[in-house]
Image (cartoon, rainbow, N blue to C red; front, side, top):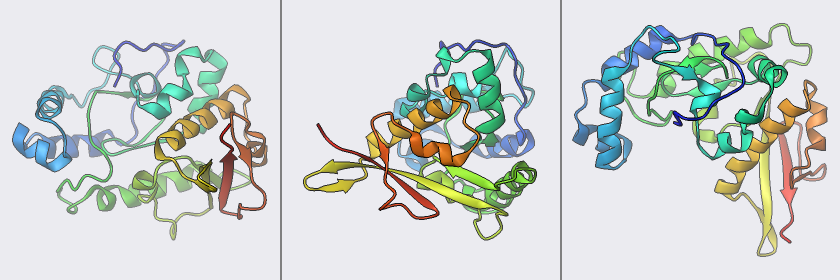
Length: 246
């Protein structure tokens, strides 16, 4: 979370699953710092920070206590998206085309305002519905994405999320096609997924899509930020992009 990053718009939307987020916050408030540290495998310092965040969290979101998601998230993926450089048209485009999976909020649109938190999708947080977040979110997220693609001619979702997050979508109940984007680099005589670099590449592709206003998946094959599409290694549902080491 980066409280100092700014984007070129004051426009915002409210999170879709705010009631569900409140349910999870109530569960998180039950934890003390030691318990939270154990649950999330984080340091005592991070645990204490997030205990404070959970207790400050308010169901009512506004620009006094919240911030647009695309301006708040600050991991390696989001550093490469570089949303601070987007103009108004690009921000409107990304709002229409990008959906972010979240352990707390379920699905977040880029301009949805959120409050600071830590809750990865893979965390086994017990709740009223189950012992983990996958069961809590799977039907809600899958149904939401079905509504999102209902009017789309191609009925395709481009998956740029990690497996930890993407597996929350029930592919058996998803009414479309999920195309997984996989980035590999040439190392020691073969092409491998390098996790840290793959994260950065996913962010770069989001930036590429936004800056070029791409709304046709075939145009993704022209992505050239250090990688090139491999027709030979790709399948209908798994698109492979390769990077040769210099």
